[in-house]
Length: 145
Image (cartoon, rainbow, N blue to C red; front, side, top):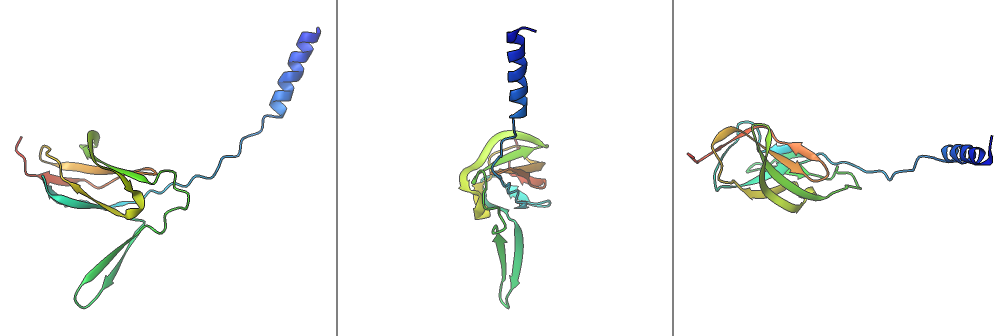
């Protein structure tokens, strides 16, 4: 066995023995469910609506009103991306329509304007931020294209 082969074998074994896995920083993913719009919701083109998501919802019933708290306090400490994007989907396919972007995902809601699209009952929204989450299908009306 020549010296080059011996040296190559030694370096190969040395590399394998000292190749240890790199410790990755812990990354938390926040996947809040979209609460509104939901199944049965009907939007009309050019109306404004609050897209609502949350870690959980609590209700307070007072004699004269009902208060709904959207709490995102259960969000992880180290969210990898706290800036949100809301996109429209039709028939379980992504569309190029971005309804909102750049907002804080911890807000729990964001107001959008319903875009001019073909009427249908197979629309849903995607909330991107730390991850992607779909709403239930809902209806958009108001255009006979």
